Length: 277
Image 1 (cartoon, one colour):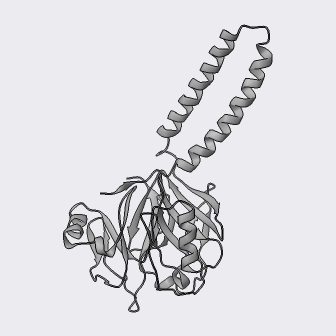
Image 2 (cartoon, one colour; image 1 turned 90 degrees about the vertical axis):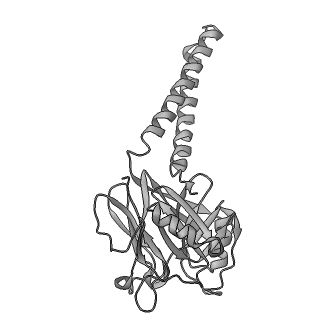
Image 3 (cartoon, one colour; image 1 turned 45 degrees about the vertical axis):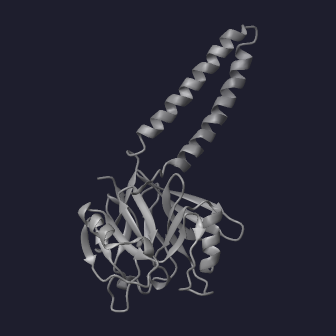
């Protein structure tokens, strides 16, 4: 039912580029060293280099879950720039208790909206346990998750049977405004033409991540940029004065993200990246 999250794709591409440069220089060195040698010897050395590259790629796959990190990637689309926060060797999870800064949590942002009565807006399930049972018929989408598995769906795709299955399987679930479904924009009239920093949980073909606009944009501009960057499905995350979040960089320093923090104390729920169970 859920789609696999391959968060290491970006790092692998970067690693392969570095390997290609290394191999290029090795081949040049090999050329000068092998002048006068026969072509069969050069061919054997090239085959050996290919084996090294294959071995390194396999090694990278093996260490994927042993090096937890939040990978930061910048994407420039036609109109706006996006920052991607990609979980590497980490699970995506929900919580209704404010996460403490600890060795196990690497990323933390609000997920569902907070209602006017300071409760979670919409049905909210954590590992099969209902944290808020009031279903909001006005919210257009929902997200189902279990560790590194995600599925984003429209409200019309929900049913009592599916919700019961989520609870039975100990999955997590929250309602939100859906932005993209099957690589197509889903109309979102909630924000009209207002500009703000925008943030979403996004499923790309090979990995899932958090995407955030660098500048203030309309929701439609944000949706178009997600489509242009290759998003398959995307669901909005609470922003505005509830937008405060944080992540650990590669030096384990805490970096704040978000735009306005004066309602931080009213946040009711959070999406986190945490070490694998």
